[in-house]
Structure formats: structure tokens, C-alpha cells
Image (cartoon, rainbow, N blue to C red; front, side, top):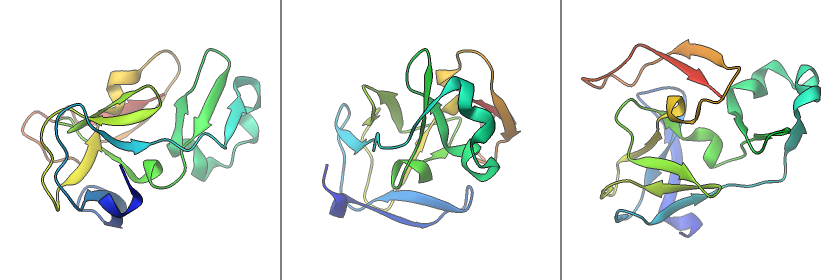
Length: 131
């Protein structure tokens, strides 16, 4: 993956999204996560409420505040990437122009924030619990 392989732009799902500028094949790394913003679980109260939406569990005692571009990967009930080894990995062929999406519900492991799903997929579950 190279930065010129993806771009951030307005999304029909929510706010900004990440879009493929080239074809990605199944199993290919689409995004490597930036690990510069780790927060101890006991310090979550000090995280800016705007940043809570970008949290994901890093390990048993820490959370990662996703940075661009990963922070702009929107949720979908029919995702085209999965989170694995601190990367977003293509689940299927992703075409140029297609929005990169992940299933936030797939990584649940305890307490979570909940928000309304806007993916508009036929199999949409209506709400998302994240982290």
C-alpha cells in the first residue's frame, strides 16, 4: 500500500471516507495503522469526546486513537476490509473509486460506544457498537 493508492474525500456513509485509487486484491494491505496515539484504558475519561469515535482496542490495557487515513474508514455491514495485525486487509477485490469500509461490530470485546449505522446495505443491522 502506498499513500497514493487511496484518498480521503466526502462519503455518502458519513462525513469523510477513504476511497481506493487502484484495484486491491483479497488479502492485500489497504491501510497500515498509525500507532502514535495510544491511550491507557484508565485514561479514557481524558480523551476528547470528538476522538472517542476513532478509538479501537490495541491490547488489554490500551486503546488506539486512529489517525488519518484509518480514522476515516467508515463502518459497513457489508465491509470490504477486515482489521488484522494493525492493518486494514482487503476481504475481496476492491475497485478504483470504491469506498473502503470495515465492520466495527466484528471487533467487539467489552464496553462500547453505540451509534446509528448509515451504510445503507441490504443486510444493515441499524446500529453499531464500537470498541
